[in-house]
Image 1: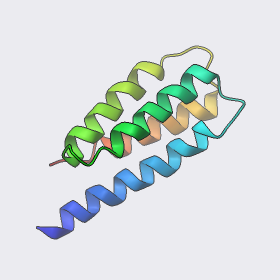
Image 2 (image 1 turned 90 degrees about the horizontal axis):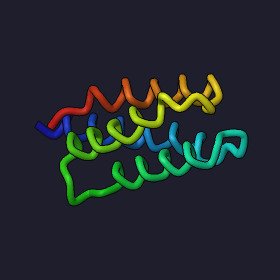
Image 3 (image 1 turned 180 degrees about the vertical axis):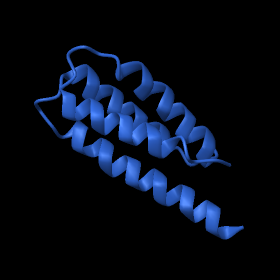
Length: 90
């Protein structure tokens, strides 16, 4: 039972690292960096289960991923984060 929980936490940590690249990239529009920051905040909310945290973050990122002002590499990174977080299950 401990393995899946660790696996989920490892995926969440990896997603946070990936999102930090967007947050710290000044070439990415501010609204997109703000959404990435909000997604990180959701992922770090330990009062919720890993699955709920991941779902909340995916919801935020999915909305912003359609932004036409987003650089292509940032969109690809966000899609990768979404794909990773969609594998997190309670």
